[in-house]
Length: 111
Image (cartoon, rainbow, N blue to C red):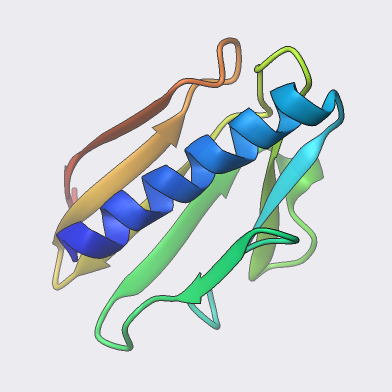
């Protein structure tokens, strides 16, 4: 679980760096039903089947009930959001601060 959370954070950082370097918007697609992340042209991976993935992002960034994107802009900012990787009520949250695009990784427990 920790490895999956770190890999998610690294992929978000890569998306942000790509947006800054290329001077264009970069999207990370999150499919919670398929438990998959996709950064087109760079990397994609599927979470282990024992993990549950949750996405919280701006409503306009949701493609449907199960898929959404976190978008990074050329200045490093983002649409923001949070990805939760968990198993049986414990896990990790990977947050993206919209104003700065900063990625934060921390523990998560079900409320």
